[in-house]
Image (cartoon, rainbow, N blue to C red; front, side):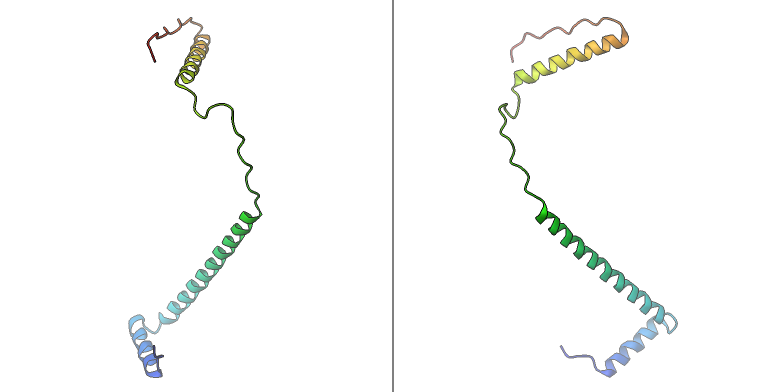
Amino acid sequence: MPSLGPMEWILILLVLVLLFGAKKLPDTAKALGQSLRLFKKETTKLHEEDEAREAAKDARPAPPAPQPSLTPATPSVEDRLRTLEEENARLRADQARATQTPVSPAPKDQGSL
């Protein structure tokens, strides 16, 4: 791509002066310079943060291997039902103590699971 000659630069400056006016052109150039400085500062900060994150990731030791558990990962349906019934009985007892009125236990369902 050929470079711009002096005649093209003069034409570009003339169009800018006509568009923005002679009084606003220095303010526009100042604002553009400040924007470019701010952009460069922020991109440098992001680059430094990325480097710090990489250094921290390299320095961090690997997490220990999980210990094998003897209990199954998910409880059986019967175990969950028993746990829920125990929780229900405990909550009813707490509620009865709070209101000082006896609450009859919930009837147990003898249906099949």
